[in-house]
Length: 318
Image 1 (cartoon, rainbow, N blue to C red):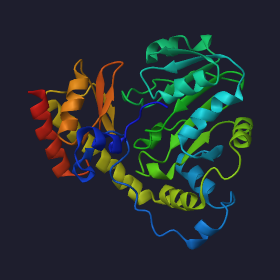
Image 2: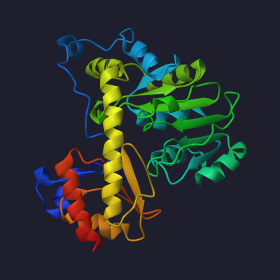
Image 3: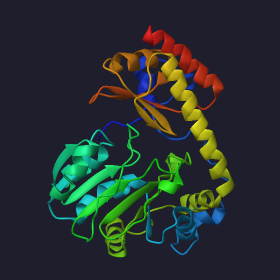
């Protein structure tokens, strides 16, 4: 399995600091979770039903009809390579490493390329995989690669796109879009997401994944979150302000971001491993990347946490 953020228990064991003393900034999940109400007892008791209002809520939120609920975008990332015979796949790099890993594990020929090169060479691949905005760099796809049939796919992971819903793309033949509930809504533990694509692809994916991809309680909570437009509007403003404050704090400490989104800031630095270790020794966990050497900072949940990060950054950058 690949490395991911959020491995707080391992950090506790390695650095010897109690769990309640840690500030975990190692993921891009919003620290301001949508407030889940009490779950109806029936949602726990009955098998999940596709005929509830989840799809209606998702179609209104994403402004498209062709959607399939999945157990987080990770489920789709692992399943999609199993729906094709061996082929040539171009994957954005640096980027969320599970994409390339899943295609390699399924026996495909994978080439990793930066954004401009992948766009320029897209026609040489049977499948191209983009992430927009990119995790971890924040880079956005400047345009959509033209695809006109089900034989050649463009996959775009939009897990971090919710703070700018005007950038949501619309599916069409050959274009597959991945959407996450965990990041913007702060509901990573729900393991919920959606795939937007043409109907035949969604049917094949549904058959591969089998029934009950989401639990009843998750379906109830996600449908309610998707319909809470007032909370969404307020949270988009808050996350933009929080991300700007984080960028300012990092810049003032001598580590200006080289990329980012409204949910995280990305800082390339040749000595990222030492900075990561120095912050961890002070009870602050951030995400370390080795290729290229960089750190990703999630959003601190409040002003006190931001001040704590500022103090720690001044010490490790000295």
